[in-house]
Length: 596
Image (cartoon, rainbow, N blue to C red; front, side, top):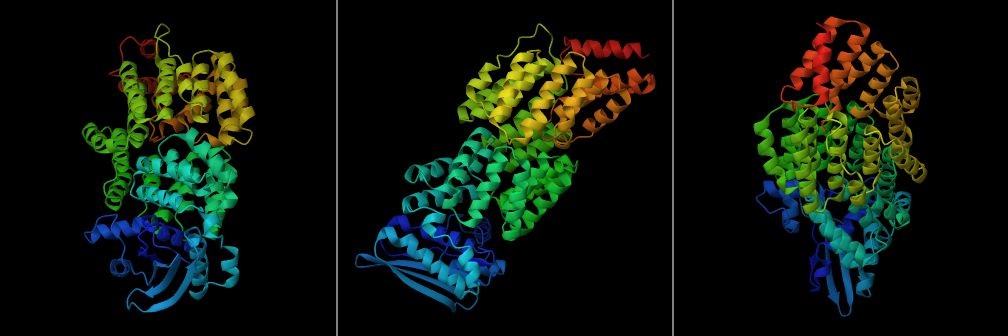
């Protein structure tokens, strides 16, 4: 472990403030053997010391940070003018005694040479600290290539990452964009801008910027290259390559939390929530002050039905991240699932400072849960508010998602004469894979077979490596069309490819149950639908409650009137506050009466 302090800058040029510290951390971070103390750890320790999170890390403050965290060494640095040249000094210091362990001093002929000279000094220091020459040679991209040739771009990038580390994803966006404007070849800036958009629920922009980072990946360090490739494969939907890359990253840099958090996300999408939890907890162990391990662990606990542990880990994250609104949004999600209206209201107010997280983690799930209980009008009102809030916050994908979700809910539980939703409005705002597949599914639900098929066929052609499109969503859309036409056997054949990828998707699993019913296989449908009812979906897919009605129909088809009556009673209880004029409610009541 080594702490990098702020440089002493006597040049009078503010561009060096923070920038050289960031570049030194990148240089040292290329080593698999050195573990640079994270910004999150520094900020958490500053908080305990009564210091502001952006306090300057002087050698004296650095000693206190090291003492509190058991860190043995600091890397201090300075830059000073020497005529038209610059003198750069790096010192590895024993944090307890203040004695120098190693030192390097080099001169840069001009300002444009400072980063390159600093990189040479960092590489030399890695050798002096005991890393083998072979390792230094293998993991030693020149700083100008690993970052950028522009000090101004590096400063904007460093300031953006500092905001991200404090839980302010939204605030990081303009800074990371500015870094790219200054240096259009800044690979890592594209990558981190992409993941920032991902964390804001804007997956189309995530893919756009990861593609640009991937094209520039040779202009990054080995660690950053793995980061870029892992996210790129995730963005294009190649789940196998994504998991392989994050596994390689974890093996190469076992003290970096990043691959563990991303493995957690990958396994969560696959529905393996135990593995997701394991990787999340590994991330917390490695970086106990980083928000991402806590975020992923809380979601894994929710999926596993361990709600108190989800609440506990989110509350711990609030302490680590200086009350980041993101975790209030997550606490709102837990409260929503548990039916705690008071806590939900309180946490949504506290989470308002992060509209992206609040919309994805609390407000869209609230609309889904409301629709799942048959309150279609209320769900539509909620989605209209989400659409407006997303538009105001500049969250195009969330806006389109609200439009598409409304269309799906109307198709699932609305009357035939209910006002339909113009799905072109969603695609006019955003055409990412997430929105396009949502629209295709909605079109299939509404009986627009040709429109649905055209979307999934276009997607499959444009995204040849996207596992989710080719193996899950395209077959699901085609299967729904077959179910609508009563072709259960054909639907089941289509859904075979979806089976390994559907564990986290209530919509597809419920569709499988409907296909089994259409094929007159009630016992098999019963098992599938019971598995849906057992899901603890943080996103509150309304199909979870509809599965209760379909289960009742499975029992009725089997001739088990006792179980059918109980299942109908459970469904009607969940719909006790449903809109009274819904045909689905009238049908359920009529079917229940026939079981008496």
